Length: 255
Image 1 (spheres, rainbow, N blue to C red):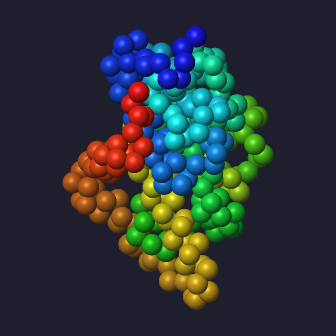
Image 2: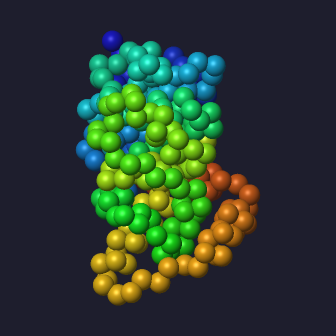
């Protein structure tokens, strides 16, 4: 049986290996930014190719231990299609398989239980337009009510409906979810989602009257973001620098 430390680079396609490397980097960056919850959240990525296979974390490895080779390849029924001594988190499978099955564009799905994200998800008003960071999130945000730990297959259509065609989903009383065409895009979307939640919690803790951003500014934010990013995705702009940071602080993810 393949050890998590044995490289699969020569056993998979170059496209799959690239996805594995970027997904492993996203896991380690999640730990580096302090958004991990021991082993209890998940990031998944679709494997390029005609099969509906995707990669997810080995249940039991900490996020800062995950490598490209240790990621588990599974199908939409939760069956492992690559050897691994580890299992997968059944709650992770429920959430991620629902989104991957419904959204062809959601090649990567990222879910966190960050302290700030859960704090805002517990607020009746959800995310408020209090910061520049919040505006891009609010432009593509849905909400999904808490139904317990995500083990119930019957919850899938409701979760998919609440996400719709959006990038961001606030799981009430639970945490945050983002989707993207790549691990880079999903990660950078989560960065702004988490930053907006952190700013909101800190602003509320100050005790003063909050000053929300006016609706007309929110309505024009998509055009402004496109202008700032020069028509490319924020993930594509930021990801090379994030990988350089990871190479300095926690190398080995590409093994």
